[in-house]
Length: 138
Image (cartoon, rainbow, N blue to C red; front, side, top):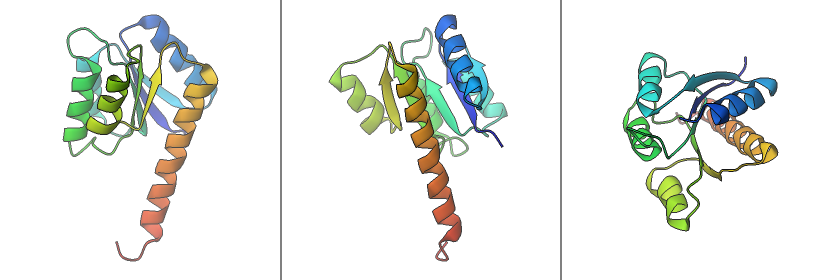
């Protein structure tokens, strides 16, 4: 079964590029053009293994989208990977430490770096699920 990834970015070229990279790597991809659409998609179907989320979007920015994802019991455990032009150290701290994103990748990005971050996060999540299943204290 292929991992399912939600890609949220207001820039069509970025969405299409990331979708092509991920589908070529064997992932199932669902696209959202903005934060509101992403939250709508997640409300209807929270069965995603990872979310790739832009920060700088009109209407609702990625920070707020992530806050809402992490505050919803149905989606709070889905790893969020920020893919953004915001590269200041404070932005990274907000994304990783305040909003609890799993990773923070600056744009422009290298294909290999993005795929590596996604593969590593999905592998770590898979190991965590396996250890929870194997642990008799649960």
